[in-house]
Length: 311
Ligand code: NAP
Image (cartoon, rainbow, N blue to C red; front, side, top):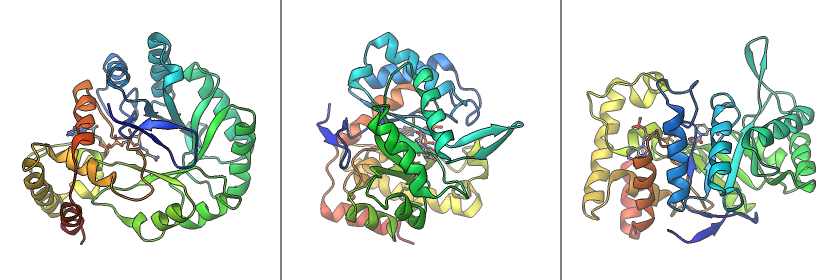
């Protein structure tokens, strides 16, 4: 078990490898998921010292939070676990809208509390920005929930640098979660420097590029979920991406580690990244990802990995 790390300026302390739980009950995201396997993924995580679980209303919808709530109840580990959840999706006449209004965020926190069977949420994120709500107002609602003890830390997700700056006008944003992995490095330009300067913890999502950086796919792999439309997985680009993954394998082999471990270890060398949330569909993947904590990269290796994925 790794040491506990503080998430930015919050009072939340976690193992640096957490669990991304969109495949726990996320039936709307992945076909053929099984709730029992999802619960076993969470149990396995908790049994192996993972104490940071990332979920959201929209995973299921609702089902991911419900399953996590059931496991926390059954294991009695609520107090030892840092739960992050998110909301912003609203179903209107069967269609999804994004809503950041204070009233909707407050209602969302109360519904998440019920599904998670708890009376506080450690980290609550606005999942996506809407087009109309001023971001300082949206965060103001979360500040109120924090003062009431309903949430312990404030997060935003998928915010642009402008939206983040507006949301953080009074320094109230604790965590930003956005897409970041070796293939997708857009946040490096303005967002990561801002998080460093303002002491906001950055949680990268899709750290394994939806499995592509897991090192197990070949040119013959086929995908039934969102990956079938993801540009990283298409045609020539996919073949080039697999070649980059092979270059990582050389580094991993030299350390008796796997590609996924080297990738996760690399993120942990980046400023403002305190904790990672690799997703897992099977309990073995949860255990496997923890091995990233044993990988030490030299400065030369850190730069080499950076270079492989630069263009
Ligand atoms: P990810 O972490 O990039 O990839 C996870 C996938 O990689 C797994 O489902 C598994 O897929 C494969 N994998 C896991 N461990 C592995 C290992 N040790 N070796 C090889 N392959 C391995 O993608 P993600 O799960 O979609 O994203 C992570 C988390 O980020 C989510 O669970 C969610 O909590 C969060 N997220 C947030 C947002 C947002 O808008 N804020 C958006 C997306 C995701 P296979 O078994 O299919 O190979």
